[in-house]
Image 1 (cartoon, rainbow, N blue to C red):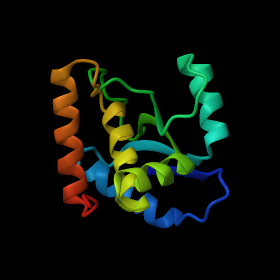
Image 2: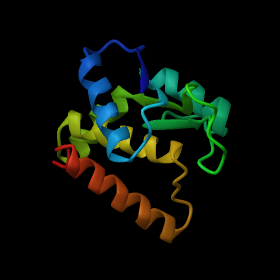
Image 3: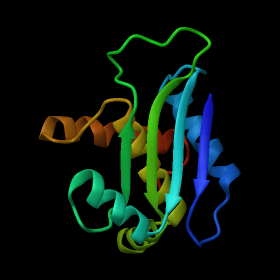
Image 4: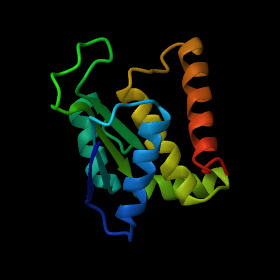
Length: 149
């Protein structure tokens, strides 16, 4: 399992901790040891640029996911990794949302990581049915990792 973690923002962040959280999320979701995920922490300005470039929305957002592999695709031949994709999180937005929702920043970043990972695994929330599935998977993932509060 490969987790590439980049911290491109000014707030202190425990990279080893978040790498471990992502490893645990991947295992909980039953991903093979060959999975590869890139996790990048940025500020609002950086995520705003990405949001504008990739989604046509000129505003910051909390998390963006960029899948590189479709769960319906054949697995690459062993020992090549399965490139699930990239998750980009705005730490500034996570801090504001944690305050707004009345929980800790760690829980909020964990939620955003789970949300991003589930998108990489093919889940979406475009319909009420999809949203219900996404919410339940996020809830169970956060609960399993002790990040539900």
